[in-house]
Length: 185
Image 1: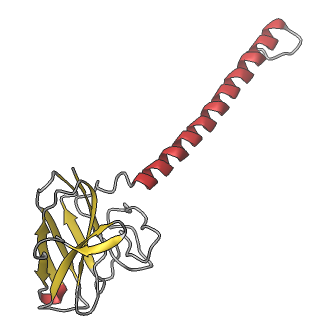
Image 2: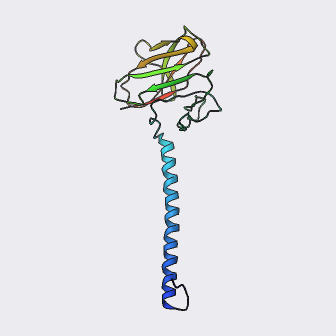
Image 3: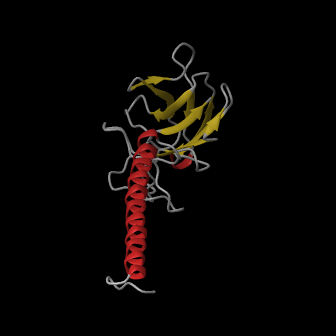
């Protein structure tokens, strides 16, 4: 290919070459911008939080990614626990399954609170308007009693659509599980 500046073919080839390089550079810049904006939108909207079959969470400040290598959304800027997984067996954990349900479908809440031991009655709470409240608020509360090692399981049903965050609390000590988020719709 002739790129000689003194010939007509060379000048045309140089113009085509520079045009192609310019278009490639513009494409790369646009791709990076769109990708960055898309990533920011995904993180802001917590899209993908329901992709795993469970939403395991802990309150450890030095969290690690889950065993599958996936991480869950960053916590809200509060003192609330994170939605990331830790491998520390002495930390409270909570899973919600399934991650997406229709209104009033069963949501299984399973976890451990090793620090409270066996035989402790835990209360289910839901976060609404940045406040944790007993669930359900109007009726008798949903509870779970811990077994060996602080294990527990219960289920909830809700007609509140959108993202619902749940946790369990030991009303006596104030110890809580991390939150587990479920999309209801």
